Length: 276
Image 1 (cartoon, helix red, strand yellow):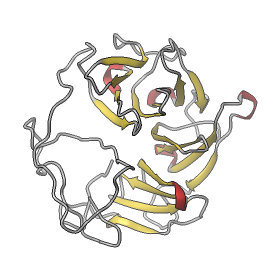
Image 2: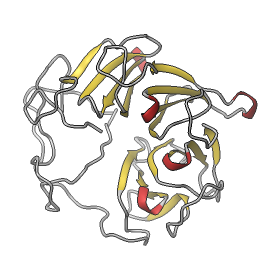
Image 3: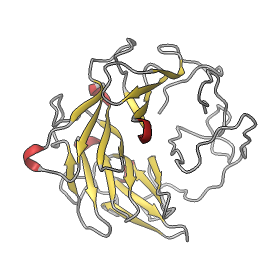
C-alpha cells in the first residue's frame, strides 16, 4: 500500500511468496474500502487472513479463478467475479452464497443470460450489478434476481471504435451513474452514460487513448481503477509499466505517477510488479 505523498509502499497482505497458507497469496485481486481510507503512519495489519470461500468447482461455495471483488458498503454484500465459472457470486453477511449473474453451473456464452470470463463487478445498494464481461467485449447490467442481463457499454465486438472494447477489465460506476471502464488493450479509460441508449451507444475517452508506452500521456495495459469522485481523479494501475497513475478525468496527461517507477519492475519499497 502507498500512502499519499510517499514514494515508499508498505506490505499489508502476503509475504511476496506464492502459497496457499493464510498469510500468503497467489495472484490476488483487491477492493478498496471507501468508508475508511485514512493512512496513519503507524498503521498495523493482521498478518494472516480468514478464508470465507474456498474450493475449486462449480458449486455455490466454490470458485474457479476468481478475480475482481466488490463489497457494497451499505449492505456489506461481497460480490465475486468467478472468471472460470463465467458467473458472479454474491455472499451475504450471514454466509449465504448465490449466483448474481451468469449461469449458476458455469456455462459460458454470449447470449443475454450468459457471461464469458467476467473479470470484474460493481454493485449498488439495491443488489444490481455491472459486470466487465471480458471475452464478450461488453459491460453487462443485471438487476437483482434477473435471469439475464443487458448490455450497457460496448457492442460485443472487439475493436478500437468508441462503441467497442479490446478486453475490458475494471468497471466502476459513480454517483451520477457514469460507467468507467479500463479498456485494457486499447490503452484507454472509457466513460459511458447510464441508462443505456441503443441509438447512442458510444463512450468517451477520459484518460489515455494514445497507444501503449511510458510517455506521460500514455497508459500501458491499464487494469485497476479507483475513483476519487469529489476531486474527479482516477487512480489507474498500468500493468505493463509497473506503476499507478493519478489522472484528472478529461486531462491529456496524468497529474503524476502515484506509485512505482514506470518501466522498472521490482520488489523494493518504491517499485511494483504488474499491479492489478
